[in-house]
Image 1: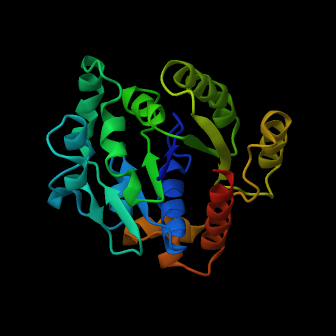
Image 2: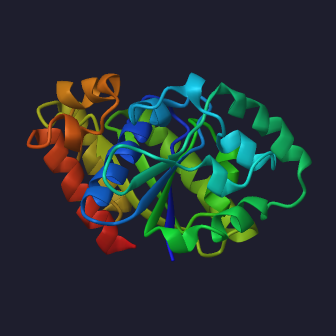
Length: 252
């Protein structure tokens, strides 16, 4: 049965979607069957896998409101062992509708029907702590927090962890923090060293061993609709994400 892992951070621009896409692709490339669910109305994870949002019939939104069965929204990508449930801007309307739905387990029921078909299900959450993120975390086995090496990101960490604790106590007692992934890393900056030192004080056992460096190749890969392991398979970014993917599989 698949392990369900959400990628979440209420701060935008921290490499959350990039990490979800690239770790999904790396693990799929290792022979595991992977489903990525795009829960962000921006749909960047969808376009990052080369899908044209205007040509998609069923999306995450259609699954949430019950317009289609979850199996009808799954698209097999051109990448080995990797499928996706896409999203588009229509999903933004689901925030209001989710507040009107009393049964918080309806997405869990949908996931349970396909869990046996995959080894991992990764959910790309929106950059907020709204109902879509609450929904994703409430059906996840674990959460990965990508964060940039900046003090604003550090300040938001406690708020996010408090949300994780609340969801764990109210809806999902099995939810665990899989790890904190440092992104856009530049070891030459004094600020980077200060942020890493602060994180190690409180979350040393949760930090992934390999941070993700800021590279041009990682930034340009979504424009080609490819994960980094296909766009630049032997580059620094690809090797770093491969190391993180390997560590993630060992953690959960």
